[in-house]
Length: 96
Image (cartoon, rainbow, N blue to C red; front, side, top):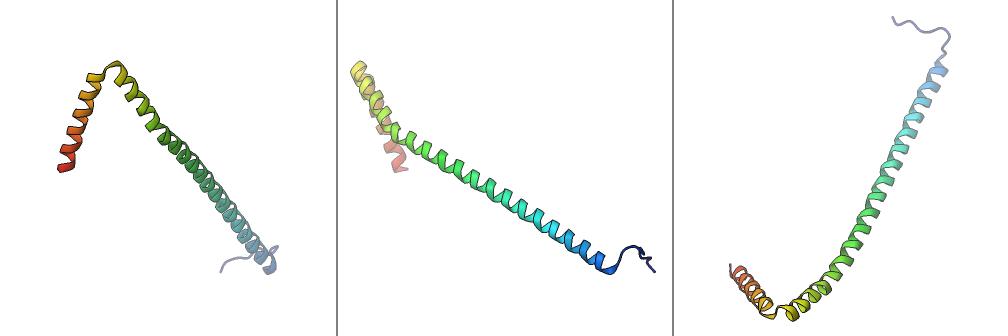
C-alpha cells in the first residue's frame, strides 16, 4: 500500500490540486492572450504593407508615363522600335 504523509490531510490535497489547475488555466489564458496579440500585430503589419504597396502601384503608371515622354523627346525612333517590339511580343503571347 502507498504510504500517506501524515501531515497532509485530504482537504489539503484537494486544495493543492485546485490551485495547480487554476495555475494551469491562468497560464493557458496568458498564452492565448499572447498569441492573440501577436496575431493582431501581424495583421496590422500586413495591412500597413498592403497600403504601401497600393500607393506604390498607383505611382507606377505616372513614372512609366514620364519615362516614355522623356524617351519620345530624346530618342523617338528607338521608342517607336521598342513599342513595336513590345506589341509584337504581346500579340504572340496573346495568340498562344
